[in-house]
Length: 264
Image 1 (cartoon, rainbow, N blue to C red):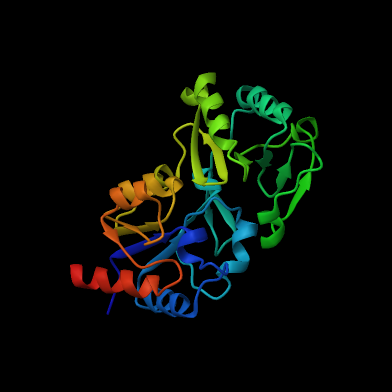
Image 2: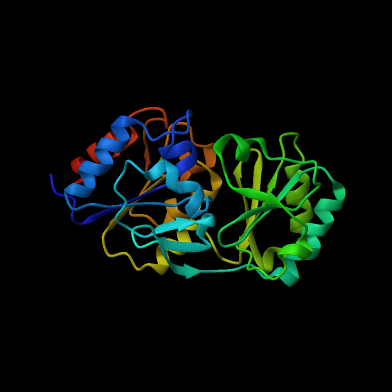
């Protein structure tokens, strides 16, 4: 089966990665088969290229990938940035400082190649620790000379709803994009920046299939010719998707390829 007219773009966490934070053997094999048969495969994630790289070592990536939830489009093969959209630091910094003062959530700022925890120095992000993400603790003054590409707020105690409310009350929605990328993650990216907008900027001519599980995947589900939600996706994404596939712990790519084949 040839797939020369098809491009698949998949989210990582909760989608292509199973609950053990691995790309399952079946998914590896079917991605590689898809690429060998002229398909184009890429990922779209909130992670940095460095953070995502260990998960991709056994699969063939031959399309432009999206990182930082749309702020960066990256050629993984050439290890080259194709497009980058940075945050307006002057406008977003007062909001970050306000949240830090409340001392309720972990606050992370993503630069080009590093993650900084800028909240209370006693805070760690246990998920980042478990996944081996490279980060360091800093204050905002120490990283002011760098470009910022997204801000992430992390809480396991229900405080992110307060962060979301404060953001909406601040009037910053006209300058930035915000969304929940998980129950415990709330993110801010540059205005009109998302996985969907990054895909649109690539002017893809192939039949585009996107796969996701969370609200940060919504825009790329909408811009696709076929938007796929995994079975474990949130209700909004399932509602907006064109096809509900198996869970992230099952043979996801096999199922999607079977569905695409039957569409022909």
